[in-house]
Image 1 (cartoon, one colour):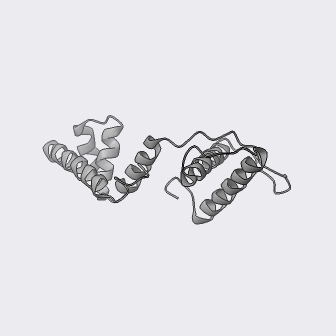
Image 2 (cartoon, one colour):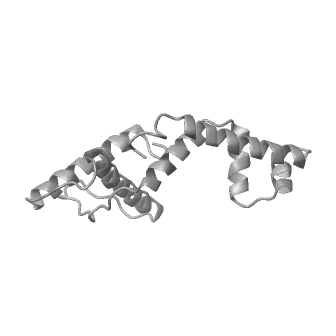
Image 3 (cartoon, rainbow, N blue to C red):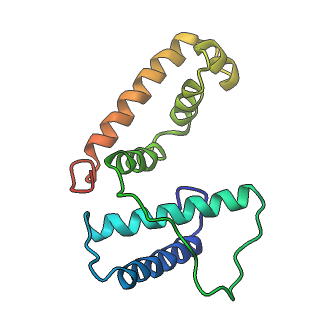
Length: 153
């Protein structure tokens, strides 16, 4: 849902991921997980959603309901980086709106002066101090998040 989807999209993607899991188990009698089930399902769902977004972007016609199955490439194990990035995205939305905007513009290589002008601020010094505060606050929120030191990362 944090990647341009709705609750219904999340339910659909989960259902499709479960179908893929069952197909993989049926196809390979010696099927063994090399990661946790949660990680395996999440990696499949991630691939499904990425493919869905690509289809929307490219205006490719939607899959019809009368197809028997959907072919998917074998998912790669979900990387630690992906969980960290998902945590970052989640916590980023907890920042004040001005912090989000300053960090987004800064990430796009906007200068402090350009950011101050864009946001209608007179002082570049304020933007510089606020940027530093926002970065520190983001880091603190990430470190304080219960998922930061969980087995997910």
